[in-house]
Picture 1 (cartoon, one colour):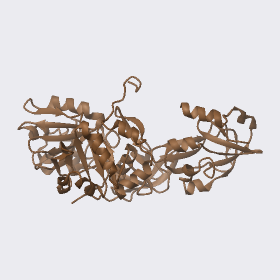
Picture 2 (spheres, chains in turn orange, brown):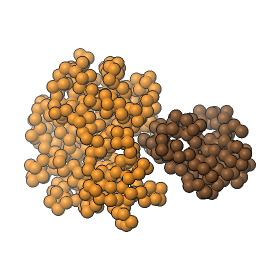
Picture 3 (cartoon, helix red, strand yellow):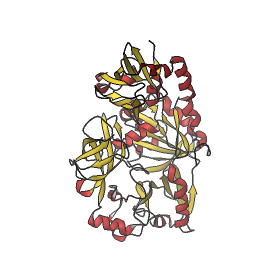
Length: 369
Length: 123
């Protein structure tokens, strides 16, 4: 279906984005701000220097209730959900029988329920997958109408403390319910930038008011999807549909850290045989960081070759890193070429540009303790 | 002669048998922060409409086409060293390359500033 046939959905902040002079683009069926007046470069650098506010209401939050919720969710994800402590959040993936990734998600234990945050482009399929895969005893509640804001950057904690003092007590990957503007919110200390920060789920009716209050704080500027992408790429974080998808496994994507020992040994998730075999024998290809030698960015789809020779794979995310102040990329290469320091060639506009495998992230992460 | 414009958002300014080429103010605004520019080699012979240069913003890469036919006689190293110059002065110091015209009549088919402004607005 084309865009003209399906009107774009809007988030609760749509009017605010337009009032702020955002350039709106279609993304995952939503009209979303790709940038505001300052532009991607300034927005990116402001987030790393101070604090940026992102509207990520297009993403989907889903809550799971019922005594068997953790055990049941483990049948769909390789993450350790049973040991997830109250008030903690964990990153995992919905895997397929092939070992591929249906979506990646965050799971938080809020005491009486699990709270999932999934990708915008996958949320309807994820909901159907949960309904098909979880027993009747687990109640599944989609909260797709709620707003989700991300406040990211070294000043995020100081700003957030002015509105929700309890947020400052959250450790990295902590999550809790708390009151924001007299409304019930779920706040986690997490994000997609490599910086300290928070993700705040709150009722749509108060979202624009809260966003405007945050934007009145001197440290805070609105940040669009363009800078969100360059920030996450510098942080070496995977983007679903690009760096990971149904054709890539968590092991190939370098996400083995998200699969605890108990789950590796016992399996019990879709694709467990493939994942366990790759853990034991090594995957034939790996997602790596790539630093082009020159100034030319290598975009998604760029062919990666061994110097003067064989095709090793393709770039899955690539562009310009404003903090790195140069081109950066991620892509899959044959396992033998995945070691940092390995020389590569990137085929950009018919020319072989020298590059090298580098350790991720490109910019050191600066999360809270 | 005043500036002429193409539907691909290049501008061209003729001075005798030479012409200077860059991207329009409108185009730089649409692209956003320019972070990389690749220019043609001096001496290269270009046909009208041929991809001649590349301009990349944080988000995307775009081709810059030759508005008319000719031979590249000079390129602007300043936009390679400082790509943001394209944002600051797209229709001035942020020029891309100069051509020695081989088909000057091709210029007659390009838009003047008024026609281009209307075209860009309607896009």
